[in-house]
Amino acid sequence: MEVDGASTSNGGASTSNGRANGGRSRRTAFDLFKQQQLPACKPVLTPVWVITAFMLIGSIFIPLGLVTLHASRSVVEIVYRYDAECVPKAFRGNKVSYIKNGSIPKNCYRSLKVHKHMKAPIYIYYQLDNYYQNHRRYIKSRSDQQLLHGHAHYDTSSCQPEEYNNGLPIVPCGLIAWSLFNDTFTFIRGRAELKVNRKNIAWESDRDHKFGKKVYPINFQNGTLIGGAKLDPDIPLHDQEDLIVWMRTSALPSFRKLYGRIEEDLEADDVVFVTLMNNYNTYSFGGKKKLVLSTTGWLGGKNDFLGAACIFVGSSSIILSIVFMLLHVKYRR
Image 1 (cartoon, rainbow, N blue to C red):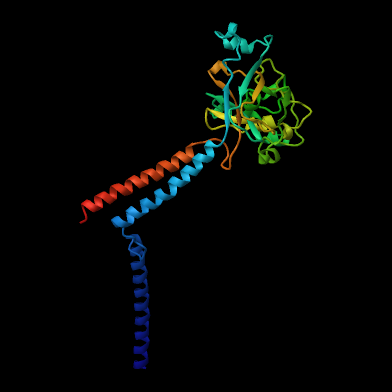
Image 2 (spheres, rainbow, N blue to C red):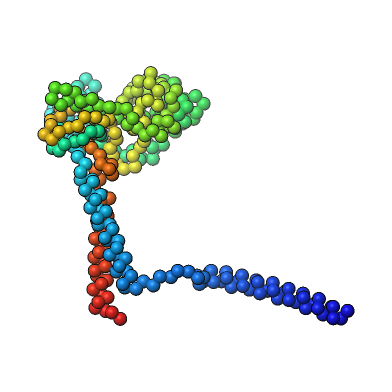
């Protein structure tokens, strides 16, 4: 009996020792984790390794930047600012009164010369400068539920002051829709008018998921203060692509929005005559308006930033590798 009792007590002691050892091992692993002493890959940054890494980065980024920059430079662009030149000389001292006077014709005729071959499709953009679409009150002045489902049973208080007119709801409501761009462009080459395709200029996701197929403009631009373009009340918002493009607000004060596409090639030295309707008021806040004709490349439109950034990173890496190499040769120890 005594032997059995001793063995039992010894078993209990060994069990308690095992638990203590397990807890100690767990605490030790946790301490190692806190002290960042667990087994891990710890590369030694020797001078040769650092120099090789910088040389490798430079040899990758410089060719990549040159290719990207070449792709950007291959895009042909024609940019023409027309807001100042399309004001009659008699009103150039007071442009605001000119643009607000509905009795003065706003048509303007200009010619653009094509310096390089432009392969179709040629994208037509209007560019606005010093226009802050990202202003907090402006960007919140809309109702996404109304654009998708109509005016019934949806709160449109965020659209103020363009929520109601004469006691009736406005569809689409809000300052963004109210300020819709309304300049127009017509293009003629020789004696033939260049057809502008204005279909599929908006994002497909916006058309299908943000603007309703059974939502029609109601009471829009019927007040005493007219903001911008009017909308056809017989066409649903889903098909009003000018509005859809405009409602995708820009984050920067200088931006371009797609107007349409010319689906014919333009040859070098062609002269394109443009008839502009200078309706949109940017003179009240010192804004600028530009017409842009542009082709595209495999990277999209013309933008030198990505190529220049890659070349800068690659060149900096090569220079650093050379500096480290000279230091390593001079101070080997």
